[in-house]
Amino acid sequence: MKILNKNINYLIFLISLVFLTSCGSRVERLSSPLLTLSKQEPALSGSGQFLALIVDQNGRPTVQLRNLRSGKILPLRSLSRNQPHSSPSLSWNGRYLAVITQRFNRRQAIIKDRLTGRTFQLPIPGERVPIRLSLASDASQLAMQFSHKGKWKIEIFDISKNIEPDLPSGMRVSTPVQELNR
Image (cartoon, rainbow, N blue to C red):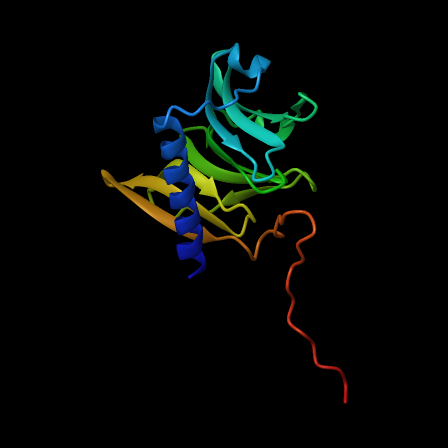
């Protein structure tokens, strides 16, 4: 049911976007130096504060993270050794950055926790090759498109046991009520 609600919200968003663009409405475009260089695959955090995108850095596609409020590029040093990068995705507050990287001849999906500095590699069974991914806004799930034996497939991974949720400010994580000693 939770996935269905997320899919419905996404569908409503897409329909709204099509409606706005087809009606000839003016959409205010933010002036930004982001538009000056070759950039691809933008991913916006749910809060709208962070933008992850793929830029060409010395001939290699590299993920870049920007704080849109300050305009600063944020460091992602631990990701620089596994290039090229593709398909970035951000959690609500930008704490988690999911991206496809390449180590030697193997593509892998990783999640970077910017708060702790840890990197979590998603185990991909068999000969599957990740193509595109999307991180749930609370970072509890990761949807991945991959190719396997010449076919395209999509799988959803529950990663909530490996990482803490990234919730909008003010939201609390619900925890089970513990019984008091009688």
